[in-house]
Amino acid sequence: MYKYFISICFLFVFVNGQSQEQKKDTLIDAKKDSIIYKSNYGLRLGVDLSKPILAQFNNTYSGLEIVGDYRIKKNLYIAAEVGYEEETTAEDYTNSTVKGSYLRLGVNYNVYKNWLDMNNEIFIGYRYGFSLFDQTLNSYTPNVITGLDDNPIYFPSNANTTANTASDLNAHWSEFVIGLKVETFKNFFVSFSGSYKILMSVKEPDNFETLYAPGFNRIFESSTGFGFNYTMTYLIPFKKK
View 1: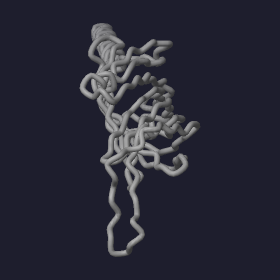
View 2: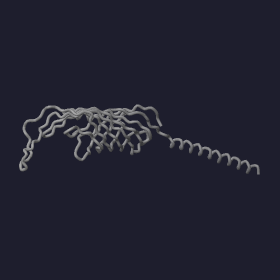
View 3: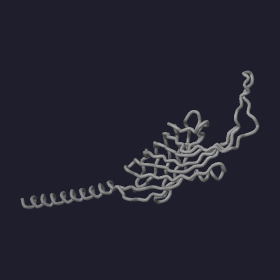
View 4: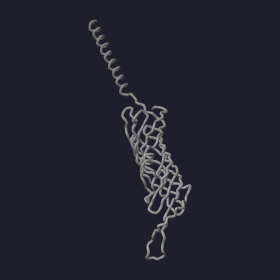
């Protein structure tokens, strides 16, 4: 009887020991599977390289743009661009120069799901844009009506070269953005983005139209336009979570 009792005790101890080992292994595996990779949260600043590149190939244009964003949630960023542009537009019968500054402010949402500790983005966004600028009509060739109904308007060969500057002009617009941002080195990012712009309002000078608004680009009759950015930015991390 004692032999059977001792055997049962040994069997219980063995089974209990095996059970404890299995629980220990399960906990270790669970810890391995539950490793959390934290991402950097902070301020990202940089420049748009497309503008100095454009200026190298177009002697009627110059510009500089500073870009930045701040991460407020896992996939949500507050984003802004501030810059300065000067553009000379030459038409058949007019030549004008616009120069001024602008601000675009909005948000980006990252729709890309990163692997492990990667920090790349495929983002969509919105911007409200505002610019304040001056426009100078450098020269123009006025159209002349002869006074006879059967004769068309003609343009004399002599152009008026007296410059006329209109100050304190402004433009407001909405902008929808889509882009790609890649972390090439630690905290260093390269980004490509395109935007579709819708002009909401523009202040026109007297007796002439606004042909170009800094930050918006060329103004067409449709009051819409497109933009492109190629940026390099650096992330200043404040915390991880």
